[in-house]
Length: 233
Image (cartoon, rainbow, N blue to C red; front, side):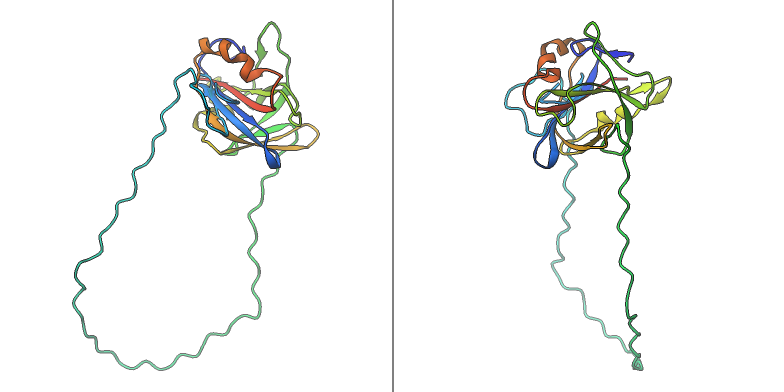
């Protein structure tokens, strides 16, 4: 995926999110492109479920069957009698005066100018501008194009676009195809400020459906949201 046209072509997935309390942002996952927006093959993730029908072909969610219930036995087992020899008393074990507290698990440190996806994959943010309606996507699998609003903005979309694969290798944004509602995405801007976004909706759109949703997903008006976009690979 050499570039992303917000209203353009290809099966893509988009994840969309909005910032809420404690900087938790609503997210939408679009088609086989992921956008943290209300909805968008492109795919999108949204914090709240949509209130209207959405174009596209959302992926089915498979719910595992409940665990089987084992019935309690209807009869008590037969009694058994066991002969044992008396056991001499055992002196109580000495209790250590103090025990060392458990060491909490280390929190992974995220570098400035990066995005961390739910499973821990990270990509470096590269500021890009849309030229001729096309958002250039870095050729490096470890980078994500960043266009639109800053992460601390009150309005407008912050759009991140990255590859699913490149040169036979799998990129971090391939993870968007396995994203689930309520998972978190962490962004640290170049100055070191952290914003946490929570996926609120998953949406999958075909490339031909993107033009109809471009303003909604990528526009710089309306409440702030984070939109992650990737292709179908």
